[in-house]
Image (cartoon, each protein chain N blue to C red):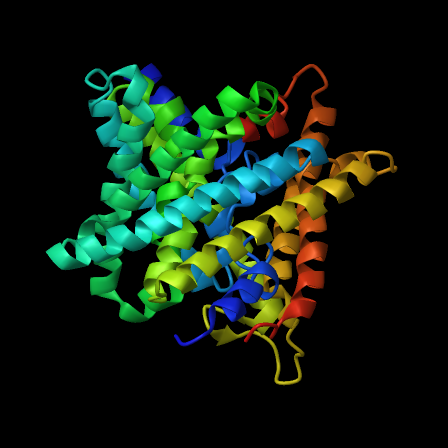
Length: 220
Length: 192
């Protein structure tokens, strides 16, 4: 009981911290930067991605022995596209305003590297339960990353969080932060912060070698 | 939508540049922009795939609309794009094996380039007609190439300069992209 529990926990937390898709692996940036103009958008995008990621990881893992190696990528893409279509229609049914705000970016979840990367690197090699746990951890990591980005951009760019004004009336919004360049700047700043923290940790325990995160970025 | 084709072309090329203003195709943008030699062909290959994808998507959309199968749109778009990429891959492998190796993993990854699917989805959402779609995809592709080439040139220069160790890598590229994006905002309003 105990070892399997820690395994599952390990599987889960991996995506949140050590292999955080946003800050460490820098995957799935397109939806990340495009929709994070406000915290609400960022959260709903995170939620939508989470549903797709967990469902597709489960299905890919279930089918891992059926799918021939040559057509695996195509199969994964079709599986992912199916779930995205489902989510797309769901959001449209639940909140039309949100659907309009996110626009084509819901459908663009299909080409989010995180999802295909997880399907290829993890779900296709593991049984459904660990695969889904891992996917859940990853999507929580993605969720947090989106929120970190969206919240900072909304606070700086509009002086609000979740639409509630935080500062006095004479706060001058830093409009550039909700415009495209701001997305790049804020994400760059977060990455700087993370590599700084990682470096400080490394200094504290010099024996421990941490893998180079930048290399892992490109292979999904 | 009654924009002329030329307006759409200029608009997607500069003011609404796919990479710098709409955040589409960021993975290859950061991944392949290390060297100018690979950035330019990569941009052209993507442009070609975009063009093919856009044309096929246009036809397919008519077909799906005729049979009332709109919910299959996303899945069929992605299959079309994957086939187009396969085509480019085979052509490149035959005629320029060197380039084929240089592009490496990023070539098949054009399939998951948001910019390509983005072209297909946005042209559907905006209900562009045939000529408009054509202008949209070429403008988008060339805009992508432009951003890639600009970024690659800057990064080549940057290798010679003294950068703090901490910022090296993705963080620096993102800051650069931010500055590029800032300068592209100067084109706002161009092409309506």
